[in-house]
Length: 144
Image (cartoon, rainbow, N blue to C red; front, side, top):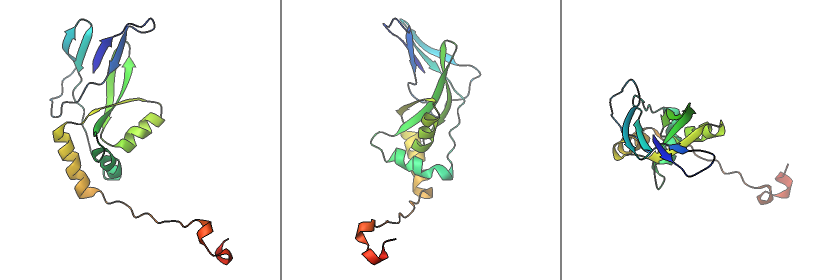
């Protein structure tokens, strides 16, 4: 997470996710990585990214996008922005936003992209869409 100072009379800083570091070992508490003139970078470790078969379409939509993202659900607790959950499913991230949560996306690291892409290749099969003909295409006696 990143904390940046602002020149606003309403808030003194802005919190936002900065990125993800796959494979980083879990630590008990957030660790301050950088503190430079009020700009801080905090490492929050211990998140597990689990892929689920019923989210395969959301993974496909994400990895086929021009800029694949890791979506982070986060909230303010006191004076600190804390990540709560991570996902690579664009569908799950949309549901989180619809529920009113704070969601931001960060660039998906190459190793995660390869892992999710491989999962999509093995588990995603698009459902065939049945085309519904407009009423105007039907013969008048077949219109109900």
